Amino acid sequence: MSKKSKKGLMQQLFPAEGEAVPQLRFPEFRDAPEWEKKSLGEIAVFCKGKGLPKSAITHEGRNLCIHYGELFTKYTEVINTVKSRTDLNDGCLFSAENDVLMPTSDVTPNGLAKACCIKSKGVILGGDILVIRPDRQTVNGEFLARLIRNLEQKVLQLVSGSTVFHLYASSIDKLALLIPVHIEQQKIADCLSSIDDLITAQAQKIESLKDHKKGLMQQLFPAEGETVPKLRFPEFLGMGKWEEKILGCVSDVRDGTHDSPKFYRKGRLLITSKNLLPNGELDLVNANLISEQDYKQINKRSKVDIGDIIFGMIGTIGNPVRVRTEGYAIKNVALVKQKKELLNSYLVQFLNSEYIAREFSILNSGNSQKFISLGKIRSLSFPTPPITEQQKIADCLSSIDDLITAQAKKIELLKDHKKGLMQQLFPTADEVEQ
Image (cartoon, rainbow, N blue to C red; front, top):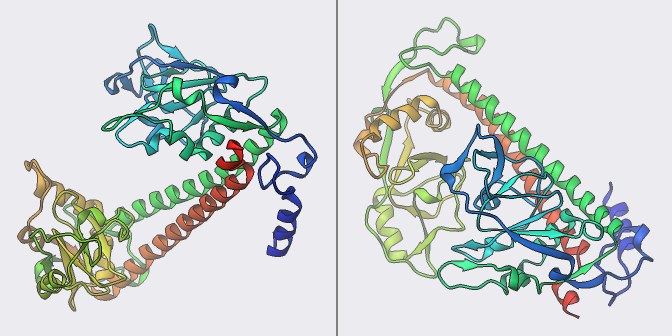
């Protein structure tokens, strides 16, 4: 759809100002009644699951189940497929189709607005799950779950507690809602589900690309004990064995500070292993800030330049990042600067291989805290091809990385679109309070 036609459609869908309806309404409901104000307690009853310890959750159990923690990590607004099982049965609470599930406790309040509609009946529901069972004749569970999530700030006002936060049925039953007729609820739910389907499809493409890259890496890098890979580009066939190299001999390997500089509200970024993401990116948003003086002092021995590689040495081991920006200092992070014999574009891919993962695991065995010393990193030994072959392998694998990044950006755009759409498809919190 062109920008012009999209804009025209949006203008048709906006109702008159001041009505108890959302900003965006589908054409067939433009003349329908205003949404009706109800409290959650008027349209639903509440149940609570029985305690379900994590130790009782298996992959081969007889009964499908949901542990409350999974509402934070495994499920979005709609639960179409239940991912866990248990052998527990006696005295348990079972789901009904159209139920809305919410966690009732957490160490932070923000997660307590994670409402999820379960599409399956007969699923065992664990403790610390608040089950909202709406009247199926008047309320669509999927619509209700999305509506509650859209009113997150209102839900958080009903949370109690100081160290561990709780959400009780006796509080949330007073949550004020605006509810349209059932058919309009279904239309909104279907619209948002279609976007969820697109997001899921894009996520599956990313997983397929990751699996493809993983399989390719197993072929492009020699297996343990081998000196040539199983798969070699045609122009390098017959060029002989890869040469064993020691990282410290072919690259300039350093590390950041091990001191603990004071943090400030303003200043220079300090990157640690927690800021190295598994996707090869840097998390600069959550980095701590240090003084200009500490920044300069650290960078006397370990200044990070574009093209360098940094990876975690303490706590999180690995997660290599090939640097695209500069202007920060590093702590407890290894720094690899390129020399003539080994390309960093190749090395960053090799550091993500199973070969290096095994090496890191061996080097770190027996330690209570994950840690790899700079000396052990420098002594890493691995087979290395000529520069031209390094470049070919790096180009091949980085092209897949680019596809993964492009797909990830599509997902973020879809999520932003969905978020904006929800803000217009549901009345605002202020409209609900009027």
